[in-house]
Image 1: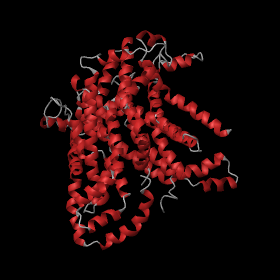
Image 2: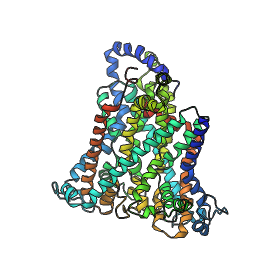
Image 3: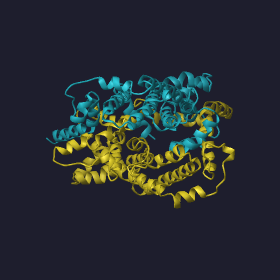
Image 4: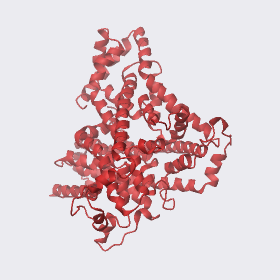
Length: 325
Length: 276
């Protein structure tokens, strides 16, 4: 992959430009048909699997559809589902709180861990490839049911974590069965998978020219100020990218919460993630109209958060280098 | 001196990070009595009993669950690489009307949470008669043959943009149609991106749970992750060992992919990630 890349910037600016401009109109047109031929599976998927279902769910969110009766017999209920969600369903706001806590606490900690380890690895450590790979491994395995099962057992009352605490004479809580701690163990599982953003940070750190650090140390900047004034600004596009990606993922956590609570969101709703609540409402209680309303609010909320991230990003993301290259 | 300290820190961190995995392996080989008494990493005696017990724990053997998982994953790999490759070629190399518009839509779907669509899709597939029945996997597979994983389309587009344009210009001057340029120039050169797509599709599908949970309702149709959740219901002490053994087995394919393609996986997230 890397071997092709240097050639690209050169070739693209020189030959591709004239070819595009000179290209006879007829030929350009002739790519319309092949263009859409190659695009046709994607287009079909876009409409059939994504766009039409989205509109269908918007419609359903104003009905009391429950799968058992035919779609045509679903009753139009107006804004009832939305009203119920915001005013009459305490578990809904609980799920919102749980999900926000999860995303806004676990994601920054995960990114901090990723950046910290990436910086440790970036200083010419021998065997960096092995370290990088092994730190990355949890990201590949951690999203599975299998690992969630192991995690839950590790944080049982008589699990490995408590026996470790026992070595220091501390009696641990029954973490996963304790409403005060269950969500925290899930957050820890999310943070444990810091390897994927770490790999991206490492690649970003490699792009920072060493001259910047040399210049900074000539000016008498210590390692903290170098981090603060060179690393952070230079890395900010990568931090931003990871932040957006991980936040959106964080809001969608499902598997680990399902495994910990056996699909209920317990103990005492402490792990009732939004998507789990949506699953329970839609597929257990078969209240699909209501669940569709939940899905649409979820979509709007994620869209809003993405917009907010991009807006605030303007103030701290520096594209000093990437933009003019 | 400082670099040695850093190395020690990294090794300590790595030990903490890998501990849960090591503990899972160790516990899988402990006897039921030992699981209750010995919480440490290593079993005093390696017993394979958990594996046989777990394998036959339910009315349908785990062999069947693993076969189901393998089939869904393999077909997803085929569908994703094929359909995303076609879309990526259109976006990355062809000039047609509306390309920018559709590309923007594709990028928008990249961030679309899958959970938003699960209910209407379920209803749609149910109306088509695809839910349940003798072969309930169509809802899991058909979307994968229609390039709905925008991430992979994007990944392959990014890669194709790096292929020198001179190559297809030359082929076009020689009278090659867009189809034969695709077949003879772009397809062979895109292999690295396709391999990355295939590996990630496999791992993600193998690990996927939400959609399989929704669509698979008969025991004999279960995939490995769905079957594993059956263990959670039976909370008796004796099932911990078999549960760990089957969990461990279910991670083996992913681990093997990791060992074989580690470099590619790491580079894969980089190219799709920041290379803009």
